[in-house]
Image 1 (cartoon, helix red, strand yellow):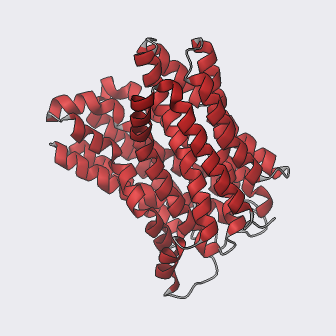
Image 2 (cartoon, rainbow, N blue to C red):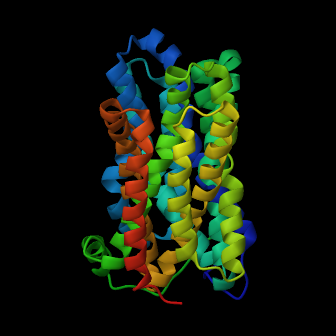
Length: 393
């Protein structure tokens, strides 16, 4: 395939790009279940374990925007193949390490493959989908996060029979097979040529582009709230309300999966003409309001239903955001760089979300946690209103 939008939506190649996104997220969640085994074998401290767990996200926070710019020069399909290949190699290297620093190094290298693939996959989807199908395609794409985490949790069931090294070898084999499939199925996607000097300049332009920065700012408030709901609600339920860890983990995990139908539903609604800007506003405001029910001492069933509602409606935000990018910046060369900037700042929100919310609740208590989430949601809405002034119909 030599071009992108050639008259029809290439759902087969879009599906493969989607699977690549899911595989990338699996890499984020796969190490956490291995932590007890790694601590015992390598005698790791808790701060070092935290660095290992956050290494990939930290790399995305640092290199997101510049990676998005470089993938335009390298070629989208070629970049996706390279990102998956790096992930496969680092997974194999991770299975061979003999100490903590070597493990940390493999996770940092994996972060490079992760950000390259994650920036490229949605840019490929934008080229493979016709404009009328892009909202639905982005809605489907936006489910890669919860599905990837769910797959990582399912893979953890094989930790006892395989051991952590065996699980990493299996992960490397899966990534290698996916890379081969991408090589076989996805050919280079061509977009109109840009001047050779344009790609490096685009990186610096990003931070001065008003509409993309405003959109990214709104998405940061979403990523902050998402990591609070996914990461700290279980802690709140177990430590402050005394519910069993196993029960809380099972119920909150199921509740967060509501983000999948939320994202697909947003794509369907946008394909039927609903405004992505309005969906984005709803996806910020309503979950923030639902957090009042989550952080009050209501019955557990009420808390879980509220959490599922927050995850489901919040799941519309990624789909709406990806659909807004072509509306605020029609230049196809800038889609991957803007997606890189989006990934970079969203990763910052994820990294900062848990510690900042923990500091807030330590100072003011869990019951005032929703006040911070509502304030951030309103800031995100203000950014979206400003984005609306730049968006094309």
